[in-house]
Image (cartoon, rainbow, N blue to C red; front, side, top):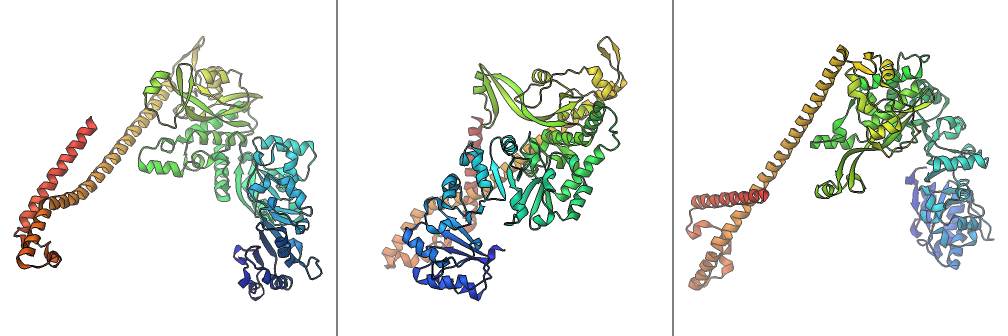
Length: 610
């Protein structure tokens, strides 16, 4: 049913129900006069094509409301309209009427959610609740029985509870509520029984892949489905084609990470997801699953380092073009898309790609976010230096820690967890050197890498550099614990230095372009200012030099020949009347304008120097 079919019926529009054969109408009790009630009653009863009658009820006294709701009854007081067609809206918590005991469908607002207990008492015959908002803990409190009391009237309940993914799931399990499932992101509670019974259409549905087959395709015939998966290994292109063949209308794929609820969890359209999945298959192609987890991990780690570069402009834009690029790609550089399909991303993208690529070879990894200490300064210096208002810092005693956000991974290898940072290792591994930030304990990254404020599984198992070298096939001759450099190391250092210098050169070039852009803008503004000032100075000079003479000439003429000032005004702008040479006048005013502008610019420069 399209929204175009829904119209508000006023007194003069009641005939439209029959004439235009409307399928959906809106009635507002305050817009229809009591004298029109009989006519409206007849129109409602004699037009079977009506599928939906939306009643917006605005507060009035009980007697007036009784008369209004009488349009749904016959002469004997019996209900003469199919109650399933009627949907009631309005300030329901403050309204009271006998008809409410019969109402089956209501649409509630945010303010009604908090009065849910009273709403249930007021509508004992209730079957369907329409609510488009997001229900939070502030609305219903921590008592989840209220949540499920509400959800039994709805197909899908959108949630915003602090610990939805655990508390609601536990409640479902503890109370054997088998008719409910919770989406992977914990933000949608789905009433399976209602969807199966097809009580009302659900336009959109977000559902876990594991729960998809619990609903038959014909039960979702008008529903666009977003399938939620934990990682890309769970859903291949062939599996998608199979679901499509069965009749499911899958429109989007969301790869959900509990550890990160930002860019990574934005749904991908089917075409983008298929491209991402195929690129991941290429990335892990040829890695046998029978080798050890550490060998599989090392191969995936190397391939990501070698094929994806850091997208500096996305995070540190210099020019106007880069700033616009940063805005446009703010999500794509932080999820799977840009890194896999364009070969460039930032730390969040690296971490998301590694997590999904490792899942493709049977290794569990988690996305980790935290802070990195960029700089430590004294509290006095912090107060003196001009930091941006949005700088992230933490003050402890007389020291201030300037913090930067960062993302990396924790990887489970042989039942032990380790910290790995593919972002910081990419250039080194690409150069043929040993990774430095790979397989580290929590204590090591806190002390050596200055990473703080992160969560995830505890990492306590230390791995020595010799074992890491073996994993990455970089062997060395050793004297005790001392590594003796070889030609591979020398070449690696040269490559690393060359790439580092290239990055430095690129940075200088970008800063130069930023400076050039800035100067162009200044000159552009200066040019516009000169044009504006030239006109302004011309007017000022003319006013100062000739206004007084103008008065004297007009006054003299008025005295001599008795003509009025208004009669000569139309010729007052003609310079020949005053015996002034036009060419000389133009040259003189141009000189004055130039001198004035030069003086102003000089004054502005002196102010800048000061």
